Image (cartoon, rainbow, N blue to C red):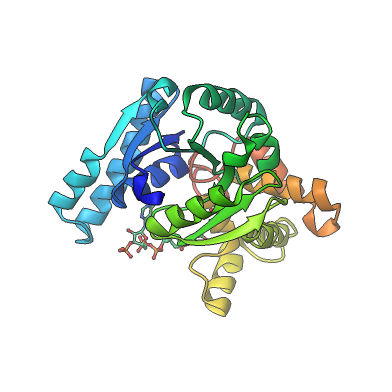
Length: 285
Ligand code: CAA
């Protein structure tokens, strides 16, 4: 079944979507990346270019391989170009009204057999599936930042997802070089339910003046051998995403461990979202 997969649609080409598009194109799929307007499309294409250039300059990719990957990638500002996609994954902003509009379009545009996946970190996959007339063909396929590098892909199923859909998506995740784990739809899924409260705890230490941001980050790197500390990781993931995951964990479990740090909330209100805005715990003024 997976062998018949050819055309993959990726909707939303921010940091995650561009990384996901690259991963599929590298694995040999023909990918159409869709963005809302030309400026966003150009930014998305820029993310992919930068990532491929980095791989070429490090000698990880030859110029020929790069050209082959690029030849499998097309870009569009029209969702209608997904009318012959076999599989579509979205990584648009984490707001249910945006997903609602998108999934009702995808349900209308894509053939009935097309599987629709969401890369959401914080919204309910069940709620997204219920927006369509094909909930059995809707799953979460959750990547980690940077998508071309991190090996885990969470396959999130709902009570409506068919076993065939799970099989196909799990197989696709393997074909793109990821290690899939299949899990039910619950706040934070698995990896974020562990990682984001840990990030939140790091922010609390900083907020209380227990240690500097550098000391907090270095502690974890030196003590536990992790590649980056919690505040650097918060900036990489995006503070808005961290807050959204904390809020969904709190809503679902009402456990004080899951209450978001006030500083995290204020940083998001102030628009300091981390690397994507140039200002987070690091960067900027
Ligand atoms: N795009 C593509 N490739 C990238 C990249 C990017 N944005 N950033 C780094 N890389 C590649 C580099 O090219 C390099 O590849 P090679 O090994 O083939 O040369 C490799 O990653 C290592 O990169 P660097 O040497 O430049 O830097 P590093 O060793 O400091 O690693 C890192 C960078 C991979 C980001 C590493 O610090 C790391 O693993 N950090 C933790 C990331 C993490 O925990 N992510 C999960 C966040 S949670 C999430 O995303 C889920 C959610 O829903 C919120």
